[in-house]
Length: 545
Image (cartoon, rainbow, N blue to C red):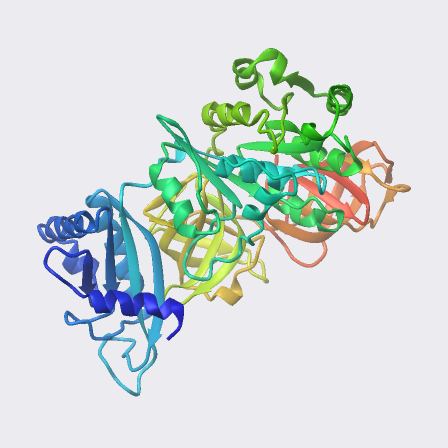
């Protein structure tokens, strides 16, 4: 028996007991189990199970009262999870994790056992006491910086509270690929999470355990998630996607004191500031150099900021209060840190605890898709950051544009955030949305989810104001970089208004996607890249097909 299936067997072996924390349910339906009177009774039962398990209960769905593996269809399982989520909310709890297994011999229409029928679903839902954080209590920070500048090490020390050993020991806490979410609907794109309560920071004991992250979410009154990007030049595309494609509240750029400002530092800084993201610069590895060298690199950082019309603010000199009050698109706080001696980490703690959420965009719901999954028992899942508005389970949406330029009607089965099943999500939240009415194979990165009554006009071409950050010669008609806009990464051709653009130039150009149309709107920021050529731009006009 596989370790995963052993979870199911342990729950079955424990069984339903009076005063126990395990509950068996063959199926939960909205019509029957959410009816007047029944909801309150089932919520009280769930609350009893949670209290019996000292804050945790286990619900096994798709089994008979005596623990037999009945199995239910994927549609019935999804409805059961929606109902269970509402019962948990009513009882002051939340679904922390759902694991599913296939069982043979289930009639996909009725849920009854049939040896000739399709495979059914049995699932184990872990329910914990406490509700999910409100959106206003959660900020998302995008990290950037040259390779070996201590970015991941710094974040590792922040989320664990442990000093680094000088060899990058805390960096190992973050070397986990964020796409490892096959066990369910999780869309946890961040490599590190920590929080705050009335007594100060709430940190992870073992960041490699998903349950430890869930504990931090549960115990914190304020949550900070880090979207950790890649410092190597060959993976700049991934860095751009992490910084442009997510709805971040702040940027954190690291500059190593032993190396100073590099070309990659300038590129990452340009991307952060081009997206108008309030940014903090952390001067790292100060334990390796003299005070004179620290001062020298501080001046390098200040010059680099002033070159792009930003005002540096040394936090050690002016204080945390000034940094929190002044941080903006034009003022960049600079913090001196060491993950080894822990210098400056308390300053970053205080800033992350007090910095206000920058807020999502106004308007109707909109989410650009960053990743897709197919989850057994649930189906197609699209994950990304809610850019505007809010979405709820049961909402009817539009998905597209598809290859032909049209949009498809879909329905929200369920939503999950940080291993928690939630009933709704607002702008700025990284979520996974299970969709009814579409196959996972038909969903692509760069597509968008919109309200059903929206009237979107996908475009193949748009006009933009661009600035060339780096190019060996000149940009002329037909120049073909990759454009990174929201989660879109697509080859496009440029047609400058004046015929050409030189390094350092700013000007107007038409931009035409090479292969297909996308939803593009005025005011959106983007980054373009081709080889070592790079630039930033803003959409000024769209041209519908």
